Image (tube, rainbow, N blue to C red):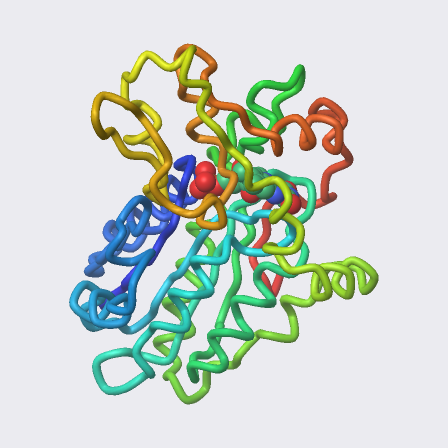
Length: 292
Ligand SMILES: Cc1cc2nc3c(=O)[nH]c(=O)nc-3n(C[C@H](O)[C@H](O)[C@H](O)COP(=O)(O)O)c2cc1C
């Protein structure tokens, strides 16, 4: 069986999850193609995303697609990638598995919106996976949420998910059911709220990351870690060469700068909102949907 996995992973946890999925399929003698779009401008900017995707995707019997959860939604580049997918045909099956990693606080409407976008592209979301991972916004707080996740528990869950996917495929594409409705598991109020407030609306006013040029030692670490290519080194200076709206607030620049030269207003706000890392968490950290 041919499996393609597309992943966007600014801080590496969704990529770790994707690699767990890859490992289980490979051990069962399947061919896996993992397309990591993190930091790849060919998949993030411009009007050739569709062509670039088609080149790398190959043929698949099932497509896994995953990204991190930001502000109750899946990070928006993943939705753009879904829109750029080829419509199913004899090379590209219509069976898909959306997956998200999240920091345990709220996974909200992420799977639901991925499945809705997949449906528009004529894909059936046969399973969905929510995977608890380190809450990267708590890295510098007094309590780091899920510091060691995804770990062995998630690996076991992924093994189960892969077995279920294989069994669904063996039963035949036409019998597979789109589980879109099952992904609407978040409380109704929360679902309504996040459907009203897009990721862009929630994040917009915080997209004001700046470099303190007096502190900056020009080590270029920010350039290498930014997943959306915001930084450049020109004429001996580091600067931001894309519009602030392209920043996704992942805070990789902030966490990796060795001299604290990055000013990141969202981190300050997140510390308060997440109660210094002691926020209430979803009861079931990681799950496969449908649950049985
Ligand atoms: C800007 C931003 C917003 C986030 N919003 C949420 C959230 O609403 N709920 C939650 O549980 N986790 C949230 N997280 C945590 C991430 O979903 C989690 O750390 C994820 O695993 C990161 O994936 P990655 O390592 O592949 O980038 C957020 C993280 C960032 C950077």
